[in-house]
Figure 1 (cartoon, rainbow, N blue to C red):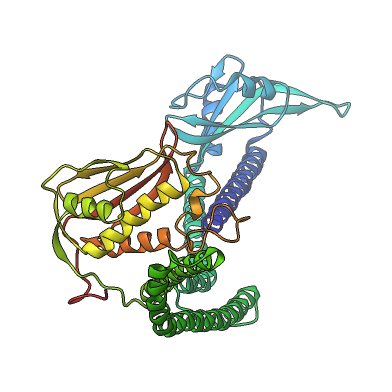
Figure 2 (cartoon, helix red, strand yellow):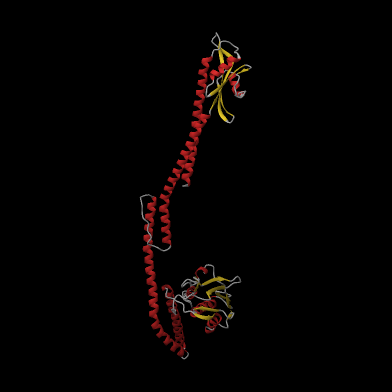
Length: 469
């Protein structure tokens, strides 16, 4: 629209100014030529004079005959001048000089603020030899150009009005053209926004056969393909989650029986000879690992299906963390700074899972001493777990909370399943306050070692009554 407006404005200015100067030149030229011809024709009626030099009365009579309503005439003869004339004297030096040279001269000047045309000529005397000589009679006519100025002004106003209307028309055409282009572009932008928000059923109405119509068709084809592929991926993801959940639940019954058997093996392992004792202990340990893995998979399936809920209770945070460390035998190995009196309403089981995963991870992958600090705020509290190990590699940090992620990919078998930190992260986000979820972030301390910061609300919002435990 700006381009249309600038083009219209430029065209209007060029056409209007061109029309003005052309009309001004033509009108003034016509007025000038008509005045010169009129003066020349009138001079024929009064010349030749009967004698030279003329008398004052003859000069006055000549000026009276030559003057009319459109022009006033002054006649000079050497030192004599028409009497009674109100016209200024002398005329411009350039005009007087041209007249003395025997030329018919004219000049446009401003007289008392009004435009006038000055015309001057000198009468010539024919000689017997066919030549002519100046007579000394100089005739000057002053013609007002006010009518021509008014005509030029009217033409100029008409040109500017016409140009203004043309500019308005150009703006209207620009708006129409811009609307024709921007409407489908805006529709495309809104459709792309809806598609980006996840509405894969978004489609555009294809109008016409131009490039924008091609873009609309391409968008529709892309959205259709994306909807089909995303639908297939969602179906596969749903099948995979259902498979994991089903398998995990199905494994619980045989694992319960295996756990009972391993309990017996643990009691008898000490009395079994050599390889039999070692085999019994290995079977017992691997069964426990398998039980933990199945429990973790069941927990993950609950997060994925959206059935995980909080079982809220009023908890003394320092006491709950101390109990977590004591149950796992870490009370003497962790340097804990737990100020008393920090009360919170949260899910104590999930807090236990988070703290156990963070401290256990610090012992497995870091180095002693492991420290744990509790810091309370009005609406939130923070638990920081740090170790003195090598810290987390910058390449590992973005993936710490991903499921089944292990920093050492070369180790195909390790103690952990790669789900502990992912479950801790999910449990932290499950606690919400004022619409803001809890958080769990990983980093490195300036002096070295990994640092995990857990931030939970002191009054968590329950997503439903009771909770999935």
